Image 1: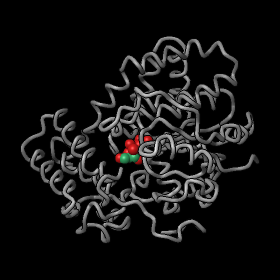
Image 2: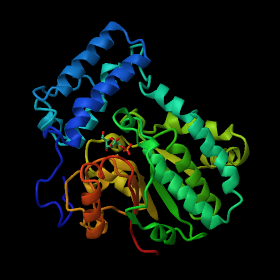
Image 3: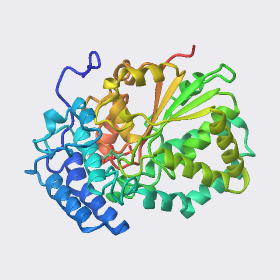
Length: 400
Ligand SMILES: O=P(O)(O)OC[C@@]1(O)O[C@H](CO)[C@@H](O)[C@@H]1O
């Protein structure tokens, strides 16, 4: 894999093998809780139940060994390219955290028969009930109603509110909520805020193309779509490409089906939300808003290893906006670097100007000033990196 020049000299890749660490807790607590939720949501047949039992045993025991994908899995070769030869047969806990987690989601889909083309569970998203419930929650409804008030404000106030809505919408992450309840905790001032730079890269009428790499469906995707609507409506972008996952992933990550659900939901809403829904529906049918579900979106690797075709697609963008924690880990590398490492250095390989809208839900962080880091280490030594109450807007790029 390509190294990020100047910052990848040491092997500081995060693994899950330290008891008490955040990644260890994901494998030991979050994944079993998730398997239980999926079991409770569907009447899986005995074969599927046995497969889930086997995955549970294999992936949560620190002595367990990663089993391969079935010999006839359509993406087996793809996973070989992504490194299965190196990690399968070894410990889940010793593999890079990013690799092990991504493989867990791939294997979970296998266990529930998602890829079994002749089976009854083919194509049934095991996370869909949770995503749908969230989209219809009273909180999500209240957020839509708030748009009617926001529409009375000047465009700059609307822009700021929609950007922050998209950013903090990232707390609505169903995997995270299995072991934390961040939506109940107050939000805090941003730890880094390059939002002025972000807007400076999107001058109205400049014919910009914006790529948005989505994260979660439901309560995160709706504000993402509203921000996209604002970009298009106020000519910050002429075209938007929305990257989503080709199949269910990290519980609530958005797939094309989830985008359609969200668009339909918006379109049926009363008031300003409904108007935005109509505009977005229309933008999708004219190609102004395009969906892209590239296989690399579910790869267990950082974006520094992206394939050429994806790189070419990003190259057309004026700005790429990556949402959420996992995309952040993949953007800057899932490594423990000094938090003061500059964001522009970690993202220098990325083919376009790039922005991260991220709430902090894992150990990785770069681009903080030393004083901010020291204050957080003093005030919240155990939890500031992972509890989802802090956020950053970090941007690399100069206006054209
Ligand atoms: O990418 P998202 O939805 O913001 O967050 C994903 C997440 O909940 O899952 C991973 C741990 O399982 C972490 O990266 C993060 O805590």
